[in-house]
Image (cartoon, rainbow, N blue to C red):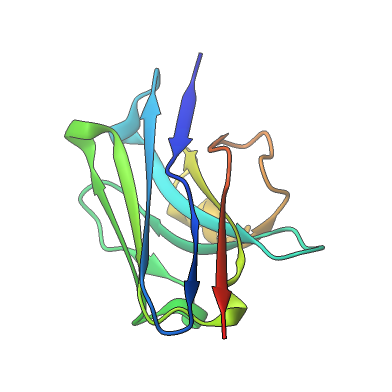
Length: 130
């Protein structure tokens, strides 16, 4: 069974930092585009960042300069380091593995969370208080 297991999220104050991790198993992790999405209340998932192996990361403008995505293929793990968090970053964060390539992901910046186009983690609640 394919699995993506995310670390537990957390609650922080505005301006603080939080890191998430997501470890995959039973699929070709190094061949997947790994992405982080987030779901605000009442919304679909919106792309936060994505990273192919041996490529430059992609960041959405609303987190550029504050969040950093990285991956360790030897550990089948993708990370999202979130700095200078804002209350509007409060959301459920999902990692996803997608084999369709970055271009396909960028055509679907908003998508149904946990859709059938890839593998998804269980979601991590991140709450940022002002």
